[in-house]
Picture 1 (tube, rainbow, N blue to C red):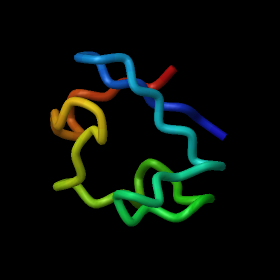
Picture 2: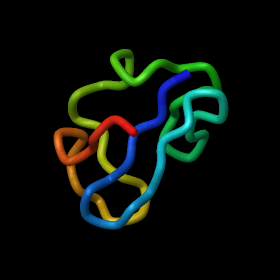
Picture 3: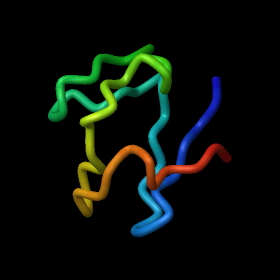
Length: 52
């Protein structure tokens, strides 16, 4: 699966892992994450992530 990185702090979203604290279960594709989701480390918006 694809990985997406925050361009502000470098956090990498890994779909196989998801992000339970944000309510994103393992296996959630990037396009299925809500547009209002933000980086769990720095709080920047989803639009500041880029595909690795």
